[in-house]
Image (cartoon, rainbow, N blue to C red; front, side, top):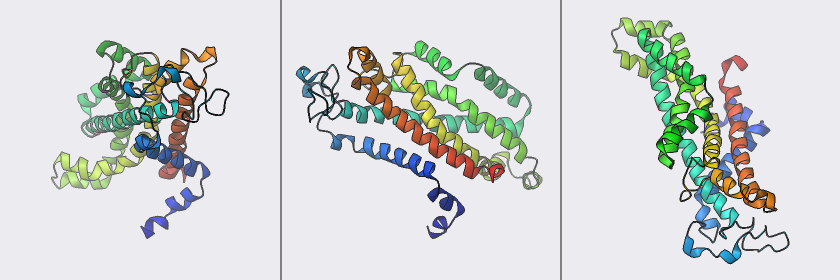
Length: 290
């Protein structure tokens, strides 16, 4: 632990306002969604605990507000603050799981393409090139329209659009690594290809993957929110922040702005924090920027 505290990375982190702010926002979100049920008195998706007489109450500081509902309520009488905490759990879960799945699949395909080359490399990279010619949200929207809604369907769609960036990055790094003497020596020594990839090539491609994975969580949160806003994401029984924005957007121009604005601010804060920390990692882990 002392060696980490004395490292250049930690030294630069403690002097980077953006990195500290970004990590604080991320940690705050994780703690909030983890402790969500203990921070609110209402489960916004327990129908028995809702009262339609509480619908569309404004935030507590406005006329007609209620101290029980800090950020007001929506059309079903659900506490907006409680809905944000519960919805953020789904959004973060989708972002993290889809990132891990994309990283695993993309890294595997990138290693195979870069190490073996030939027809395998050509097929994988041509598929990647075709996919990159379309916007990610358009591909995800098409997949969701084909397979239906649900958290599992969203995870499949996000993984399908997210693996490409890992595959291309890992392939490029692998092509560089396999030309180095230590890899050539391992081949001459007769080590199996799988062992060479696992022990010699994979550790050297991890640095850019850490940066990509960090930023991609925020990207996936935004894509999932867009899908849910368009009505093809998560169902109403498993609400995410995007679905909360959609529900509030229907009455946004009726003066009931809080039902949509606060969930939108929550997404903005989360993605902003992730991007700030991701930018710091990019600068610190990229030797070309040293």
